[in-house]
Each structure stands twice: as C-alpha cells, then as structure tokens.
Image (cartoon, rainbow, N blue to C red; front, side, top):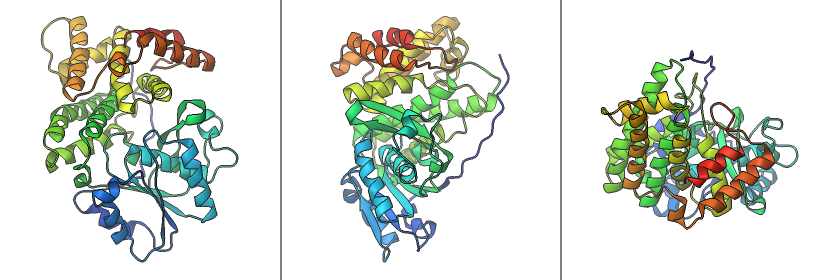
Length: 388
C-alpha cells in the first residue's frame, strides 16, 4: 500500500442551495453585466425555472440561447460563440443539467480562444484555453457534477467524436441548487443521474489503496447515500428530502474533493464516450454497460479496493476476498437494474463484437492508454467490450 499523493485543491464555485435559491442570482450577477442565458429545451419554462430567472433579473437586458441538447454539439455551440463575441457578452448563465453546463463552459472558453476551439479538446494537453467568459449556473438535473468543476465533454457530429477538456477558467462562479426544480424530471433522467454520480465516485475510489482514509470514507458515504436515496427519488418524485440528498451527493461526487491525493481511473468514461459517439447512447447508459465489465477485467489489479467496496458499501460479510470482490460488482449491477438501467450492449440492440471493433480501431489509431496505471490500451478495451 502506497502513500497518499501530494495535492493542491481549490474549488472557487459558490454553492447556493435550497428552496427559492434562484432568486439570489439578482445579487450574484452584477447589474452592468451583459448576460447570455443558455438552456436546453422547453422544460425550464414548464417547470417554472425560466420565470424565476426572469423575475430575478428583471429590467436587465438578458439575451437567450436555447437548444443545447444532450451530448452538446460543437456545431450548435459555435453558433453561441458567435453571439457572445458579436453581442459583447460579459457573463454566461447556464440553466439546466450537465449538458447545458458543459456546453456553456465550451462557449465561455471558445469565445476567448484564438483559432478553432475544437483544439481545446483534440489537443487539450498542448492547446488548452487560457481564459474564458465568466459563467454561473442554475442546476436542474443532478448528475454530472459539472456545476462545481471545470470540466466539460463535447460531441462533434461531423466526426463522430466525443471529447473532454478541463480548465481552471471554466469553473462556474456560482451554482444554484434548488431541489424543487428537479421534481418534474422524467424517471429516466433521474435514473441516469444516479448512475452517473455513482460512476463518478467509483472512478476515483475503485483503484488501489494509498492510505487515503478520509477520501475513502467520503467516497463510501456518497455511494451509500445514492444507494439509499436514489430509489426514493424515483418512487416519490415530490420527496424534498430525498431530492436534496441526491442533489448534494451528485455535486460532491465530482467537485474534486474525494479525488485529491488518490489515483483515479476514468477508463469507463473514456470508453463510454466512444459508445455515445458511435451509437448515440445516453452517457449514463454507457457507464452502466462498461463499468461492470471493466471492474471484472481488472479484478485482480483492483482487488483490495473491490473487497473494501463490497465489505463497506454493500456489507458483504461472507466468503473470501475473491468472492467478496465479485459480490460487490454483482450488487452494483443489481442496483443499476433496480433503477431500470440495462447493463449490456445487447439490451440496446448493439452487437458487442461490432462495438469492440469500432472502439479498438479508434483507440489504436490514437494510441490511447487508460486506467489508473495508464496502461490499458486498445487490446484491453476490446476485451472489456466483448464481455459487455
């Protein structure tokens, strides 16, 4: 067992949480800002969020850009980049779920980027954004944790790619979290959010031990909360207490805190992005498909944390370590099923051999190496997908 890694952690996002919190944006956005409000479809108008935003910012000249859909498209977002520059926008307000937030981060950085902003993603290590238009957000769908981190994932239809970037410049200045705004969400979106948050924790937790006792316990607490509160949010959409706990757990899953000082994986996400790019699956659907197969493929290398996961999170008390590790994975998969989430490619009418072939070819071309050890290549990814 190694030692906790050195780290620096700073999260500048102000969280404003609770019923009626949207009204506070009147004091969070300066009156002299030229604001562009970004959103997805009509849901923010039907659930009352739009009216609350307009009331809070009344008598201010707020422009609007709607139509940011799931897996936000580069092609759509570039239209907003043009508006920001043409209208000299000084502040972006994202209203919606993770896709709207991710798209708005791209808009914020893209408007300040010299050259093609896609290079922020395609060449993120060497050509990152150096500045961004300030942004804030009102979260209506707990899932991605995008409301309090600097990361975003963007799709490009023309090349069938889905890539990520991250920057200290794209942390939201503030995030408003009112659990009541989530009560009208379709069950599928709630289910997706639970699985997404669960997977975020696992990517940071289920690697190998480094004597990070507090981070482990914090991660396990988030997982236990999702297991406990997630089903309640599906069964009783108007249960404020469950909604509040779920919303806060999803934020904590990816605000950076549980990931400090520990190795992180993210292979499930990277593989999942390709399944979305090729087949259009929801992000959470891909995570539910890939994660069980990846954990089984890497069971020996992740043995210590898988056993800890089984014993502490699922209270597995019988059997040896190998049996416990498998039991933990099986319990996780059963939990996904209990939410109505499929965990196999075939459940979506996708041939595993075809998916494995496509993703293998792309990762081989890129020379991709994944996982906490940085040594999972195209060959291993193909092996994982063949079991999915």
